[in-house]
Image (cartoon, rainbow, N blue to C red; front, top):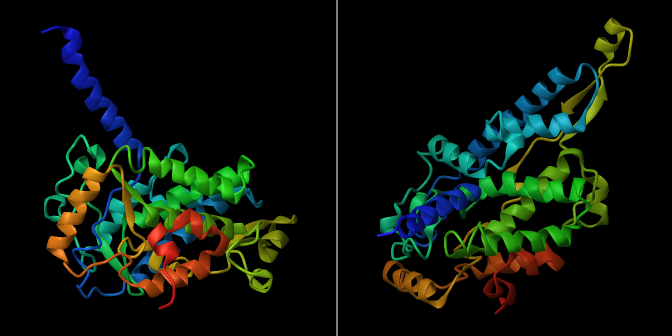
Amino acid sequence: MSVTVLMVPVILIVTGIVLCGAGVAAEVDSVTPRKLKLDNSLTILNTIFNQRIQEGIEKANARQLGSCDEDVLYTELRKAIFQSFTASLGLKGYALDKQLRSLLARQSYSLSLNDSIYRDISYLEGFSLNVKELSDVVSINGHLVGLDKLGHFFAEGWKYFELTQYDGHTVDQVLEWGKEQESGKFGYTTTGIFSFADLAANFNGWRFWNSVLLKQNDPLKGAVANFFNRPHVKCESQIIASIKNRRIVRAWEYKTRFDLSDYVDGSWDEGNNCNSYADPVIEEKVTSRIKNVAPDFTCPFTAEYCLAAQKKYGYYAKHVLHPYCLIVDKK
């Protein structure tokens, strides 16, 4: 056997690992735990992220010596949120997902791939899916949400924001870019699965990063709501420090507390905002398992959540909702 032939599978494996590492997401089975009663994780998640945001603000202030540097703020916020000193070197969504699985172990539902609706997807059909364990599921205000969505929210949401903030992209353009990524390394290419719920989390992540300093209006809010909207962080003069130093001292202050319920809705739940699959073979495998696990399950599971999402996202609904969720109407 030639060396060239031997090298082919090795190259394929290495390529797969690289692609797997590039994608920040795991997958989640939101059908199997459908009837479980999970405690609401909203409070603990808000506590975790408010603490981390506060930490990021304090570290930004420590670096700025009496002034307010936006780039420093964003960098320190990402380091604190992802609990990573290298946050600026890449997306940390998958690492955050794994942290949250540990922190919320008592409130989440964990399921192995071999016991899930994806158990029949082969390595060739979904390499990353088979390498990474499934993410855990938690309840957030009654919505079954994979913890991977929080990774998407902060990491992919940052990428969306970065493209609009620094590269001149419009919101429409970044939403299209997000769909391209889900069709590639974050979905079809690595897992065989296209998650519209990931796209909903990504968009809301953009909304969060935009709301840090609120330099643009929130596209999901009307004129009145935007008028009264307030940023999470503001640069304020520090009176006592200014007197002591005999010069104007400014620092970032945490003004509006983070509340995940401002962003999460039923479209983050893959039982409502359905997945698409890379080919009919994969779809048939997953559909067959769903029939075994939950014979009465239909997607969307709760049509009212899709109706609410249609209203919330309005013009942008076409970018984040599965066609089944998009066409649901009142009965």
